[in-house]
Image 1 (cartoon, rainbow, N blue to C red):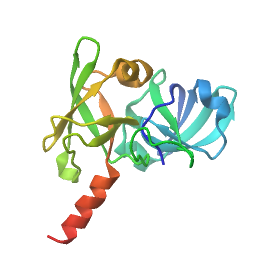
Image 2 (image 1 turned 90 degrees about the vertical axis):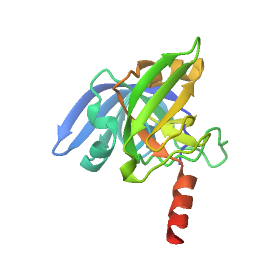
Image 3 (image 1 turned 60 degrees about the vertical axis):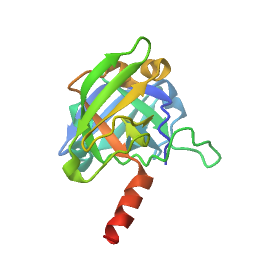
Length: 196
């Protein structure tokens, strides 16, 4: 389980195709602290560390993951957001995040608001996911608060710290992001659906 509080960025330095899978070699300052078999969130996608060498490590994404996330669109030199699993004695600084991406969205607007940034996103609502005003959303592994929520669009505001220390600083209009919708909202929606 994760919280959506990004610890570090990792640079993709090599991508190898193995059948329908892709193995990513990444460089990160915190890689020396990783362990083989450890689950790490990459842009909100939970992937298992398979090899470590100094400040580089490897993870593999299977076809299912590549089809449902933006990992299939990244290239060498791309930076991804990293978060290790929450320790049992840790704080919930963000919200409950599983590292299981529900779908992707497209950034439709990026606006500098004199020190903060406003981002608008559009997603395919036919997949059954939804946002709620002032609810939680995880975008590329970052826990954020939704506003301007509609059937298939929403906005988020990014403070300078988050903009500087996550890959939001490289996000532009037209870019694809990973979305994980609030798990509590998903359970409530499912329960309510059984009684209608």
